[in-house]
Length: 180
Image (cartoon, rainbow, N blue to C red):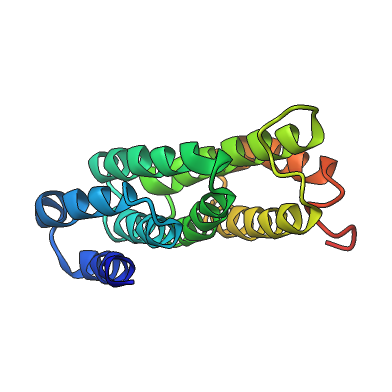
């Protein structure tokens, strides 16, 4: 619980810190929390990394944050709640229009949607077969995609990047309600 609280506080503190200070002081601690075996701590670390990306959406910080989020997404087989946490956290990228972080979020959301939904629909995949979890992931993906798309003025190419994610969502009857 203490480590989870530390992750939350570090993510919030990053907004008030300079990028070099975040790189030296926050990212190493968050990386160690990401390596924690406790899934709750890892979920909070994902949220904190996303907060760092929002606070400092530069190319170099996005590279650090993207690498950490990718590691967390690789744990999805044993901890599907992490994927959901990362997807929820990426919704904030919509508050950073035109930045490398927003572009990364679009690519990441598309990769997650395609991988998880296609794996769930295919046989023998690593995707979640539980309709309730697929619904929660579908809703989170849709909300995050909507936030990122809402930040695009048409010049960033995010619509083209996110189109495959939306197509994947529409293929899974459990991912979205037909009325959406």
